[in-house]
Length: 492
Image (cartoon, rainbow, N blue to C red):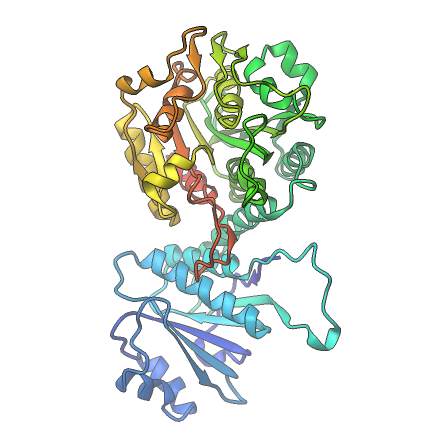
């Protein structure tokens, strides 16, 4: 569980906890308050700075032994050269919380001077991100070997209403991130389409939202042949999940968030290689982002109407699975030739995006771990962004920057549609290796003509197979923050 962060900030002189983290920029200078604290530890902090044992480089750590009457340990954390203070503080706070968890301190104080509402929110989000752990399926070690979880954290700064507001909003965002990361980390036999549906029901009940769940029979009645073609090889019940949050004016068009929810993707008949196939439990990170965003939006009571849509199933090979070469009829009525059954996310999203029309959306934002081609293009640093609306692209890039989830726009030109023309149907679901991320987005575009739309390919950013320093190996929470900031940015 994430740390509980007290809304009431405390003064530096009053902090007497187990660990105090101090975030400092490159070429640091100790403030008057820090120099007073430094006197109690024999000038160790000042000597570290003057001797350049600590230089404030990004992610640099320096431990100082504390005092019996104050913090027992002090951790200096470098933020490097700061161009984005909010992002730098969020990262430093996450690292501080991770160190507190490793040390088993149980509590943490975090100091970074001149904190306002925005900075307090960023620090809180970082503290919650760094303290997140998934231990649900691990046997607890013997009691004498256990370390305390990070249960309490405090922003060590003069109290103010702005700081208190920042902490509260940061807790809401951090809770949404934690939910998304927990759902993503769960194995596919536990985080099933039914589990995602129940999670949506729980969120709806907590915050007075409306939830609608469609199963196989209801989707057959809707004519969702594209979605159901993916689900026809699995005995698990597919779920189309719709959650409606009515925080805005009656009749106001909603911002609609759409997430791909492939709880496990084997590739179907076009089966994936065995190596790293276990990571395909992360193929529902778009759906996790929608649920995490709804959790945060509900907590913050944002004055806007929002709809969350999720297409959840598993993609399995079996005697009933869809075959390459099959043609299916989508919810929109277009016929799709299935070239590759591992290009399944776009088949699910095609019908979900068509279904979105009934909500008369102001805008639709979808996120999906859609293509390995996007990882080749952008690596694990930025999500791919696709839209025919340049202003919408700028809006989502800005939202991602505020959230610390960078994105980069890729082309959505009509010329690429030639790659997915079919000889036997209206369109085919794969154009092969060339421009794979682009042709996947072009495919989705065919089902979004009735409203403003933007697509995020998060295949390279939703999870990491290595430690990211601020976050451990595993799910990153992307696109939760981008969804939240996009919705917040639309609040007038």
